[in-house]
Amino acid sequence: MAKVVIKECKSYDVNHLISKINSGIELIGGWNKFVRPGNKVLLKVNMIGPKSSDSAAITHCEFVRALVRILKEQGCTVWIGDSSGGAIGGMAPTARSFKVAGYEKVAQEEGAIIKNFDTEGVVEVRAESNPEEKMFLAKPLFDADVVINVPKFKTHSSAIYTGAVKNVFGCIPGLRKAKYHKMAPNPGDFGQVIVDIHRGAKFHLHIMDGVTAMQGEGPTAGYVYQANKILISEDPLALDTVAVDMLGMKIADVPILATAQERNLGESSLENIILEGDYKSVPRLEKFKLPKRFRSSKTRNHKVLVKIIDFFKARPQVNRKKCKNCNVCVESCPVEAINIETKAIDYEKCIECMCCHELCMHKAVDLKNERILARVATFFYNLVQK
Image (cartoon, rainbow, N blue to C red; front, side):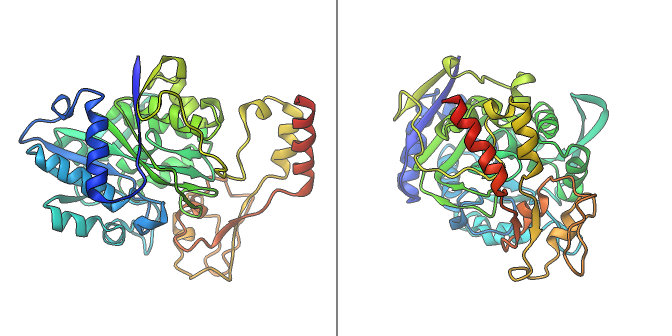
């Protein structure tokens, strides 16, 4: 059976974090189970773009600092690595993101090494779901002795939720990510890409920063929710199964996780997951706001209602009053659907991957609200089900 540790943690005080993380690791066998003195350990953080740690859009820099100190104490060399999404001036903003996030400062102060996946080279692997497809993953994943996935607890405007399973998308360096958004715009199909990355590289441990989470229209345009949680597991799908249950959802409600379940990436049944730490049953995060596009699996099974809601569903639109003309939305659109001058979106081309919304660092891409008929349809469906 899979095991997931949940620790209650209310602040980013580094000593408090160290205590909580260490006590959580003890419950799954202790650090000696995962690392040895002299090991090169890669912390694969969530660094979607040049966002501050206080935004809840990225793994908090003090969470990373705590892990660096812990691993240095174990005698390890520590790397901090990722590749940001999007493009500015034809390049992914990864170098700037390390600085804005605070990781560069942490690395300098704690003796860690920054690994910019965009400049470290790649290793070619075959996609398990399509052996004819070559994938190019960041070389540090294969140079490290141990890889620890350090995701952020967040909502996602397209994928609904992003956590331990999806965080590995940053292992594809630079602008190659756009290819996969174009190839698999549907979150369920995109899940195939995510599982292929998990199969192609080895992730030894997953430690989620949920001290603060992002709610609403994540992964960058939402707002902070004080969740006060650290989740730890060797199984990424088991960790996410517990996390989405905290939000009142099921695996079937999150298409990427449903695909991971189908591909047997890990354990997805709460009955087969042992909870350790500060909780023996899954706690609920009260009044946590989910994305506008969320529909429960129960609602999706009602074909008539699905057609009505899909007709009126939210779509991205650039808010010209907020827009700073950085053109990250234009350059990051995998189907070139956004006009560089007017920022108008061609909805005939748009594949609704939500990259424009996800990667805008100024929160200038709004999602049109569902119209009243969609809300009425949902209300009456829920009324009938009661």
